[in-house]
Length: 112
Image 1 (cartoon, rainbow, N blue to C red):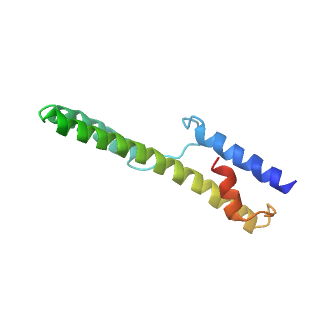
Image 2: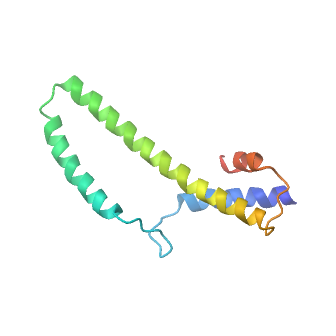
Image 3: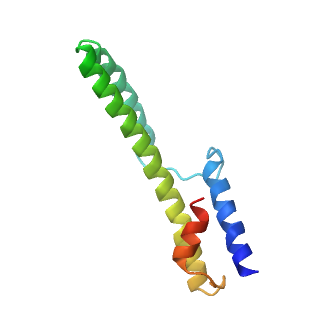
């Protein structure tokens, strides 16, 4: 029974991770919007500069930028899920959830 509960918690976390975060419960990080706007302005200037480079150099920089974006997304997902794991482990430590599986096994459940 307890394993099924943990499976459902894992499914719930994966569902939350995929949902739109424009709801009232989303976290606002100070400076996020300003930095996002600055980044967009810099992107436009960099793209103009990029067009002045040889094609081979342009391709290398574009690939690097794409990998940075991928890594940024993955780091965000990791931090998001890690926060949930900490909350669940805290609730287990407080005795609100019985922990019949190890944290390692729980992590495997939510990594699917």
